[in-house]
Length: 268
Image (tube, rainbow, N blue to C red; front, top):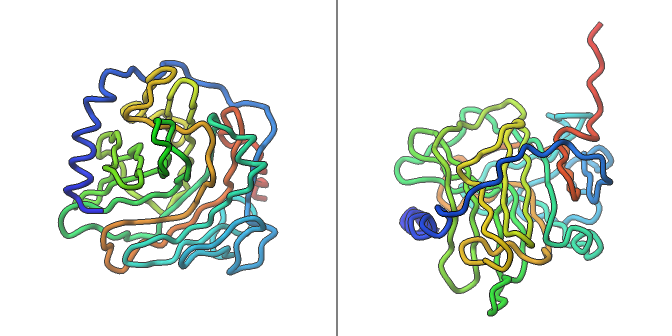
């Protein structure tokens, strides 16, 4: 996917979502059950957790962890997917079209910076059928970034349909990848066509939207996901490539925050 396509997609999509006001509440951390929780502690190094399929250079490693001793390590590559995917029908049915997701990520420094143009990287994406009448296949990218040639990146909501133009809504170029663990939380709701993103507990309001029931244009949040992928997929050449880690993935019907993560033991 070229920079021109990204730019055109965001410019085209902007008028569609600009009139949609983001939610104004600050949802509390919930207490409901986890539908999925993965801390990578029970998986042998180099492998993928039970129920996940590997794609590209990715695997569990013991060289870094947000909690416990292991995490998912994404290896360097110029471009292409390095991720794990789950398509368990029971999990996808329980999630339906409304869920909260959470993970921690960090990126080895110095991270790649494009010589010109941008580098678009997807950390979490879900495959589904569009809610539009054509019901064509789509990938809904719920944790997605675009980096400029200054090393700054924006968070975006991005949808890639099969056979037609992608679209999205991007925020400001306000962030830089770091080697500190970053908490990312996202929320999608088919019934109200609402998307929200929180980074380290603060909402990224310039990518949030609520379009309303049955208003799918410019959002296309599906009624049910077919699969969800976690890892890294950059579409432009990133030279030596990104090395990154992901840990403490969780999915539920309510907001997760750091719920379920063991409290670190106090140092003596």
